[in-house]
Image 1 (tube, rainbow, N blue to C red):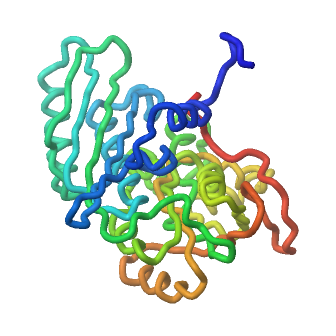
Image 2: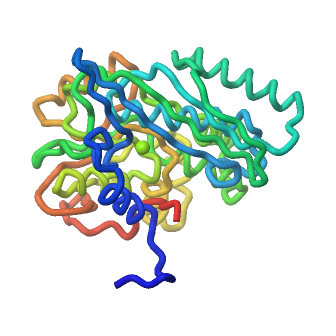
Length: 331
Ligand SMILES: [Mg+2]
């Protein structure tokens, strides 16, 4: 029996909500990147919500417009993970008591630029004068392009794929916090950009509807997010760390590290990647390779779905072991 002082983590809290509160089928058991509403004409509306706070998800000195851009982009990444195209969004802000006019102008400009860039329209929200750090909560609504991409669809024998490069967001945070100072200025710039302005894989998410069996966006760390697919699908994901795609910046950094294997695990568990991790049957491999060329997005096969549970790491010799840690949790 739990006592008043017992602590629970973020995922136990979500499980409790799913069990006792979010019972509507549209909630999808709180097991996916968003909820889904089915309309009589066959259309499916995907709804996602995500909140960011300066100093938690960005640097504490990040400007409100930077925090808002990242918040919108992380929400769009969830929309992509569900195989939907974004249409509308609501934006709720907790601003300092008396914001400066220049600050408001920056927020308005940033929202306008971002909504045009991503083809979404602001339709509402709320604003309060807050006492804590600048906080933004965004809800995005988007139309599913085909069958919903869900975490629960992985099948034994599927290939595990990931888009883009993993670890740049984590490395960007280390650079921003001046914990890592050994990168060239060009590489510093590229990883900082990845940390501050993640690029949601919207075109890829839509294209994978009907091809991938399961998907999730990588927000809390590749291995931790792989655990979510494994758990929701009732199977295990075997991942070969050596096959996980790394950018030139992360490869260079890794090359100079004293303990490259431990450092590689940091890249795989750091989070802030906003790439898509998905599984698909092997017969779709050619189609996925074709998508990679058509969309100009790096897509790599990094493992397999197999019987069991959780995430296993596999070395070059085929030996498997449990991941030492998997990813970030918010509390
Ligand atoms: Mg997500």
